[in-house]
Amino acid sequence: MVGGVSAGAVFFAAFYHFSHRNGAVNNTAGNIGGAVVGSALGAAAGALLGSFVGSLIPKHEAAPR
Image (cartoon, rainbow, N blue to C red; front, side, top):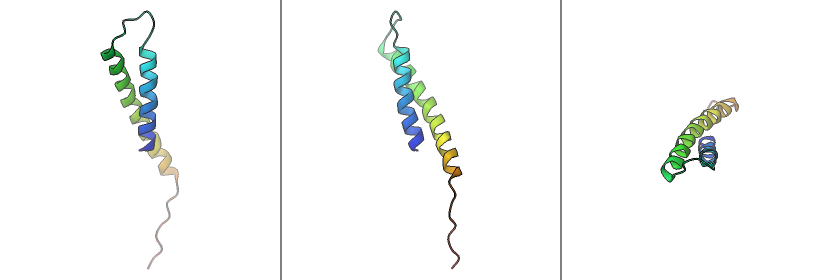
């Protein structure tokens, strides 16, 4: 969950920054739209990476009663 949220925020900022260029037609809808798509891609990738890292952490089994 942490990986998905943090990667989504980073990708949102990155896609917004790179979609807003000098000399290009810049409008709010296009810039925010690209940033939302980037956020979704980043969130999915971050969540998958987070679940992979979480699966590497050893789990302790409960002691038998």
